[in-house]
Length: 143
Image (cartoon, rainbow, N blue to C red; front, side):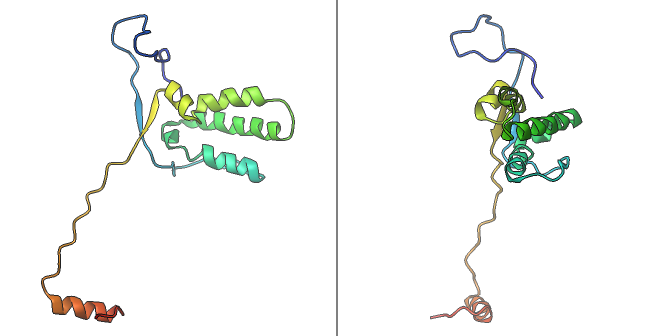
């Protein structure tokens, strides 16, 4: 899940002057809709949490072990909701999974928008009588 290398430092605070060895991982900003492990029957809040976690766009990068880590984190989340300890462990695990913008920056993951699909522009009709007939058939009133 995590990339190798140190967390990037702000400009001007770098210790070394050579090029960075780690690069950003660009992920298209669309909810993940691939295969997701079934966590079983869940109460409302854990189901909402699992829905959010399992649809993050960078889930496309996850392997089987990452999904197992997420399922184990779900167990910790349910225990936390039940009033048992585990808040700090949950916070650490959620950061490792990249649930926030800050955590994704630390993991060097960034969401990029989908390229705009080129839509053909609709040209004006040349056969006005046929266009009018089509509108009348479709039930549009013409004035």
